[in-house]
Length: 64
Picture 1 (cartoon, rainbow, N blue to C red):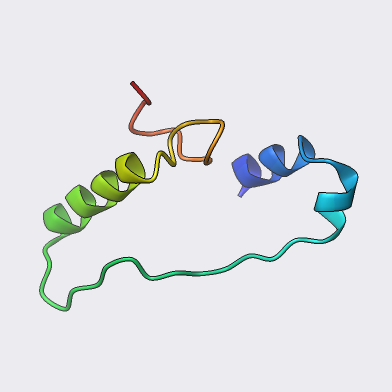
Picture 2: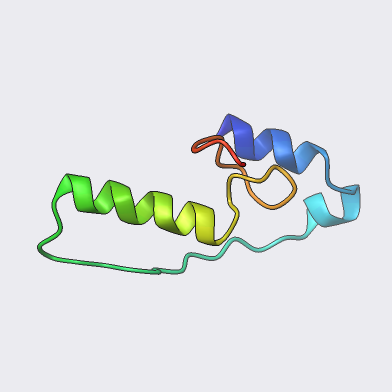
């Protein structure tokens, strides 16, 4: 949570005072193993560039 808070400190005050957080389920499985779940997580992080500091807050995997 500290990383998210750090990112918010860089936003303009008007944005910090009025924002919405939304949850979106991108994928789900009742039978996936931990290994499959981890692979899917990395796939989505890369697909949505969530590890690019300009886009998201994920610090792993390192952006290329």
